[in-house]
Image (tube, rainbow, N blue to C red; front, side, top):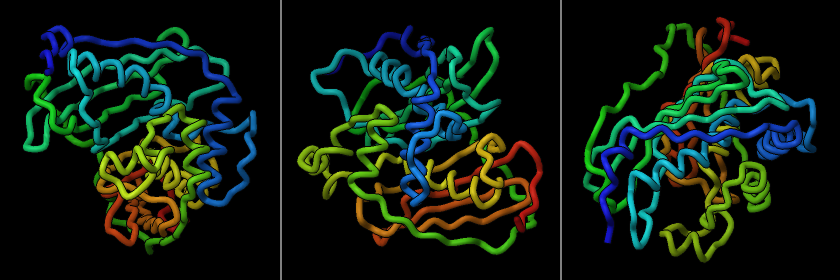
Length: 287
């Protein structure tokens, strides 16, 4: 049985605060870098990954989803559909980050209820750090009741100056998946326990979707931002299918003057679609 969420849950704003340490930032970035075969010892001076704001927002987002669902005997499975991150400025070690999450909308679909959430990260005296918009599906759910609106995608329009695409292939392992779980704090059993993953309908453990996005960002940073993660202005993606350990992960990057588009495929089909990364300044699409 599911008790409908109260109308106040649809208008609630959940707040969380935490002080970010250099160790946490370095451990997360090292876990991501290990996926592309780069040096992966934590560096206390390392820049935060552009997807690190998602890690900081996850706890508050999870709590507000629980409020929207209401009291339930069994929480419905949550499928991450889309993610957009707008970076106002990088997360810095030692600062107190405030996370505010509010629901934007809910609507019923054949497979369940689709949700949209907006999250704002700020530092110190309300200095904007990042804005996130998350799309997710509550599989088999019938609550919350429909409300609100779904924002249009912030995906930029290509400038029409595309250079030749670049293709790279990586393979994630159960060890790199475990490292990412530890660094991100996401210990969902489908990423760590084969039996739990099979019970959820997967052939075995699967990679964290945001770890694959982070992998793509690292390749973009290395190839188009001279290794400088602070140049990344925004990231967006649609999730299509999970990535399994050991299978080839084929990343295609299509550089344009104001963005790099990307997509990820495995032998089973598309994993990430309509991905994009933007920069704080206009860049040369050829390098």
